[in-house]
Length: 464
Image 1 (cartoon, rainbow, N blue to C red):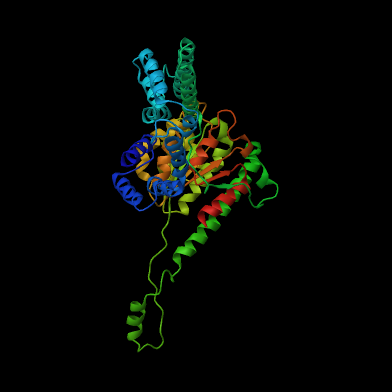
Image 2 (image 1 turned 180 degrees about the vertical axis):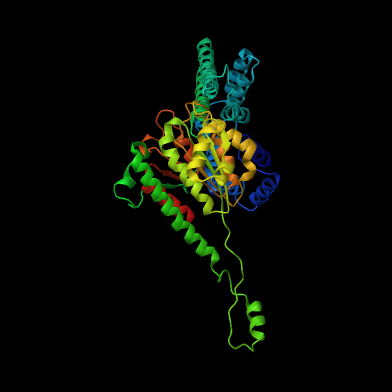
């Protein structure tokens, strides 16, 4: 049993499920206190120690079913095969003949180990593909690297299936033909499992995702118009509306933090102050602990596809400086550019003009969210902490480049909240080159933000 649990822990680690040595020791100790033949108790004990959060339970359930049901690590054969009278000698003989024809290749060997009952090498191959980075060739980038790697594995699975079929044809007249047929069926079921693992969705649970779909009607006509269809006069009217909103929110925040009666009653200070006047009259004193101001980090897409909305998003980002103690702002197309100093030193219209004309943002390039996340993760991850809210503004269209969603997951783990504002209607998410359905699994909140009313709702919810 101990060897079985150790091997399962190794499989979990290969699938990027974090399992520490201390957790493994705790798990083995707890297994001694339960009936390991009761699967509900056994699975609950493993999941309690190996899955740290609700988000990891989907990955754990997938690995548990693979390891203890489809692969049957405690037996050479699965129960269905035993009922059909499958002999281990037929299975070993068939695997031995396939190994003789097998080329000296890590992928081939991983598949053969999977057929023999060891899923760990194959899990390594799957993880290698999911974490594969794209190497640009001749200044042209694409997301074909992962696709070609998956296709290579799929072709190898089909080649293995064909080898099984050839071996059956060669031994049709032998006395063990029936046993070999059952062994071949057993291996084909494992090949089906391997193919399913290659194509299944491995995104984590995100049941706590707040997907905001409604908004208040702050402005009847102007507030419902998409940013992309505004006239020059309407744009100016909308900017004036945003400025008035920001002034109101700034006043509300100032009053909140200027309030004298903050925190709990300070008994010692109250009695000490009252002692000078024999307690008449008594004046209550409170612990002077001002509320913490959250930190904001923003990543704003300013590419051509969202530029009509990006101008107002930059206005919103600029206004946040007056409502929070620390705001770091980045604009991007294919790499992040720090525009915090520009926003701090200039008024809003001048600041946006300088972002457009005096920065190194390549506005004529194709949007690449994966590269933006990679460079932000590499150079600015230290800006994220448990007090930080990360706001990403963009349509999630990455021009078929590698989305690198695992980097967004690491950024989520570092900060308090990840909020994504998308200027596209929700019915377009996931269409074409949009990766929104991929990215929203790693966000705490996603919103469609394409008109003034939706933008006002977001600012009020964020500040108040």
